[in-house]
Image (tube, rainbow, N blue to C red; front, side, top):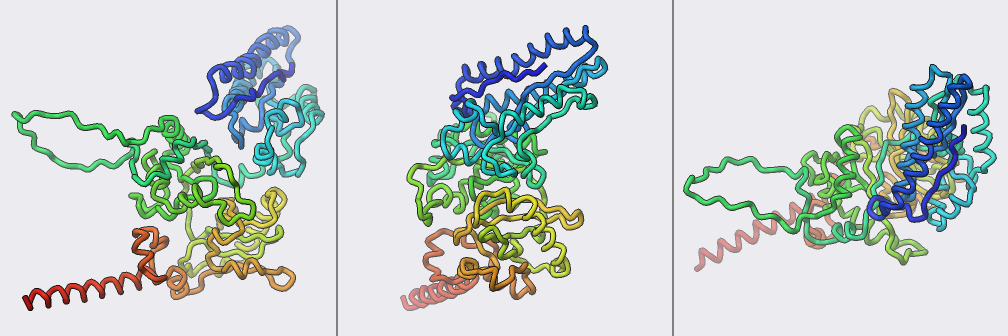
Length: 482
């Protein structure tokens, strides 16, 4: 029995815009239809002594969709769960259940849905085999195997025929949830005032004596509190799924420059309040929202769409984070991301270099459809494991850290050899950080930065203190004279 009937409705979109009728129709066909097929097949197979039932799911049920199609993805997730349970319940009756999970396949249904170039590229660019889509006959061979006696010891399996798509990054990066952000939320982020949701907001502890004769008044409600219930709900769900904490980013940047404002001094978020606070306080996020395309040769005219990415929080060691610069699909430089001195790093250099190059060849080089880019990795040294953290554009808006962009732009692998750079002394670390905390300029008003004439925070603070003392002395002198 092959339950292969299903739909992907053209109006299927995100949680905010998908209509209930679209949701119900998708669930009726994709989930209830599979249930009916299984129900009647079980009755027939009991009489014949067993059999094989194949239910078509999708790779998006395993890793989520790059373009919003909530009802379809949810329906295929339901098919996976249903198939696994049926496999366990009926295993002793010699009735096998398996899910077939196709990747992008050249069918009218998919091509109608991927009706813009942007949708096609976001979905299809990372297929490791390098083909635009698979062919229907390749799915048929997968179904034939699951239906035949050659798979007699296979049941309860999510059988992927996706050109390696689901495996390309899932096993080498951190779990993430993507939340589409509507225009009114982007307007909220761009607004000057900072009003935050109450959920998760710290409360001051105090003791208040109340006169029994004093009339009590209800607490006034703040009408400026942001009201985005669907976004807050999805943030809470992600936090719960990821064991209580996430860290946020938008399409390109994370609000690293605003970590100082959080109670933990990190990007660790345990509530919607934490996420909203970091996004509202970050100059990096503001740049993404309003200036992302300014230096592009083909500037995007239309307002881009934005997504909030929530990644599972891990306590990573900053010393093991590295930035890799790629030009013409070749690594031209690697350096540590954290600008502190770690005495133990040089001894690890050969192993770290080997692990990063191997990771690049196996998981990035042939899978990322760009010639020039920057990617960040985290190295778990003891396990010799590398994790992909993020991709960044190969341009001056990306921090070059221990390189400079003129050097990177002019780098020629035929003339020079790429190297892994470490900070080799405390004095070098101080020089790179300008003797100030990381992102120190983001902690003070822009007016102060404008007055600093390019000085470091420490230099400007010293000069400002001297000026204040001179001003005080002058004020005291004028008072004495009067």
